Length: 186
Image 1 (cartoon, rainbow, N blue to C red):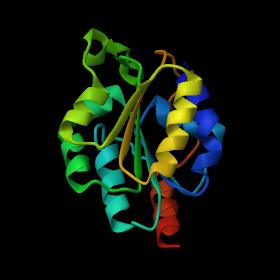
Image 2 (cartoon, rainbow, N blue to C red):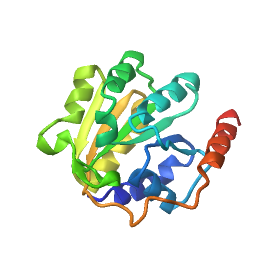
Image 3 (tube, rainbow, N blue to C red):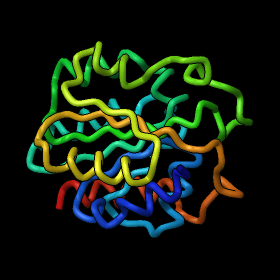
C-alpha cells in the first residue's frame, strides 16, 4: 500500500477534524491532496506529533483529533505512547505510517525493518485499541472504525518506502501556525 493512496482514501473524513502531521513525506503528500486550515504540519519537531495531538485532544475534548505519524518519528518518542495511554483521550486517532525507513532523510532503515512491532508496543503501553494493517481496504476499514469507536486508537499502516518527488511545498509554514491557531479558536 502507498501512503498517498491511504491518505487519499480517508481525506474526506479529515474535513472537520483537527489533523496534525509529522514533517516530510506525510506532510507533503497530505498537502498535495489539498490544504485545509484544520491541518497542522509539524515541522522541525520529529517525534512530537503524537504529543501535540494529545495536547489538543485534551484541551479540546469537543473536537476529534487525527495524528498522522511515521515509524521513524514515533520511534524517537516511544514514551509518547505511554503518555497517550495514560491520559487516554477518546477523541484521538493516531495513525503511524510504517515504511520501515527514514525516507525523508535518505531511506535509512528503522527498527521496524528488523521486527519491532509498533502496534504491539502501543498495546503494551496501554493504548486500548491498536491494529496493524497492510492493505488499503484494511486501512480504510480500521480508520472508519477508529473514528466511530470513541476511544484512543493507534493504527499502524504498513506502507511502501516511496514518497513525493519533493518535500518542500508552497505552503508558508509560519502562516500555517497562525491559520491553525485561528481554526482551533474558531
